[in-house]
Length: 413
Image 1 (tube, rainbow, N blue to C red):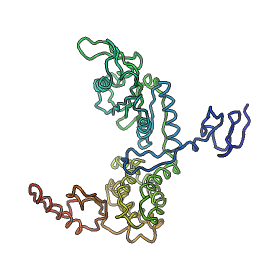
Image 2: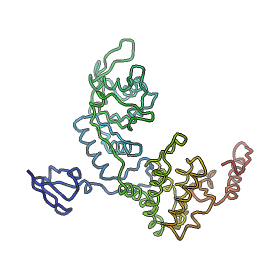
Image 3: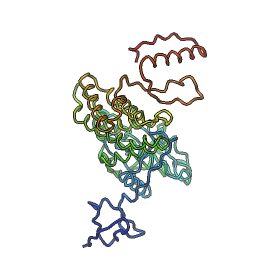
Image 4: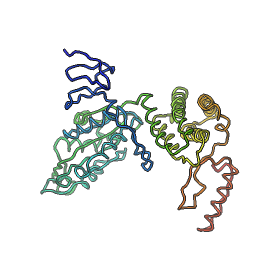
């Protein structure tokens, strides 16, 4: 057998030994060139914030995403289809899209297909046929020298027909097994498709998602994506907000860890204390909701949110809009209001009076009619201020376009 050895960042274990610093061997990558065991966490790239990038395109590198990207690269090299499976919010699509973005466009052509309950086999065939060109009489494929990568999101969404099959899945199974499909014209000619590789992502069955034919799934390499650990979630959101606040005053930057910790504390509370029930079936909260809160905070500007209390109040607004606005009765609302106040008192005790002031109104309407000016996301203070602001917007609109008569009142919100 192999001998164990204590490894470190400066002294990696050779491949003749078993490293023991990490809890399991799954935490290591065998580097065959250097002939050493490398902890995966040493291979994680540092996050570089790009302000111009859309929030949905941001992917903070983590140990899990590094492992999955390595597997995707390997499967692409051996031309093996891959499907990622996991709960909502585990970054299946984001990880896959980040992998696809880094492929060489000179070697790969990409087509993305989003399945829904109404997707038919004809829809899938048309998407594929639109992405290939004729090579010979009955052979089709991407341009010579290139490979077509087809990414299918929500693979298990198509509805099951009376015969227990999902038609898009049945068509893809035929394509995988026989390497082609039949033309939908009168002659039903056989069309052979070359140089195509498939990647897919899907959630677990249930809630509109169906079980997929196991014979079809056997043609894929299937990888399960689990919820990230608390430390990983903190690292992800802290990296994004730290990058976003680089131009903010130093005192605002220092409270970012506390904002992330407060968000996770409240998230855990609402998961436990407000579970979904038959009358509250929409009380389903996941990492996607946390991402929406952080996305809202990424709308803040340094010349508007100049002090810590401004940022904390903005955070309270985002949490309230994303989470609390889904609560359907006063008891649940009051419960979360109390927890938010306790959390603000715990992490931002000096600012609690300013942060918890009501009403909580944020928007970017001040420059709504000025197309050339930036629309700053800001605290709109109270209903009187909002009323006068909207009056100005309506008056300016009436001067420039067809006149409209709007009656503004407090309940119209």
